[in-house]
Amino acid sequence: MATSTFRNKNMVRPKKRGVAKRRRCLVQRRRLIALGMCEEEISKLQLNEIRALLKYPEKVRKEAEAKKNNQ
Image 1: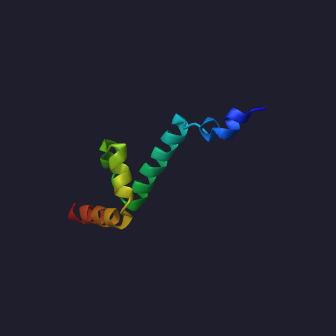
Image 2: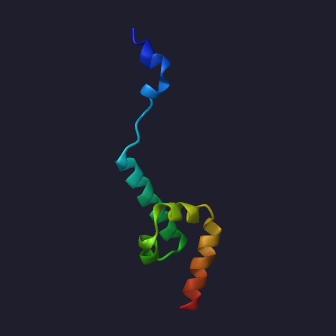
């Protein structure tokens, strides 16, 4: 009987994978591009900064429009 894996759910839990993390990061970058941010700006950002920007998409959209209007 496999009681140790049945009782310890951490043993059965799926492992995190690097491929999934890279895919999530790529999707998040594409979301920022869709909001209107420049690709050069996004490439300079760290992952935690990208996630922080995605928490407030309307603010990002307004800032991106303001930068385009100023140029």
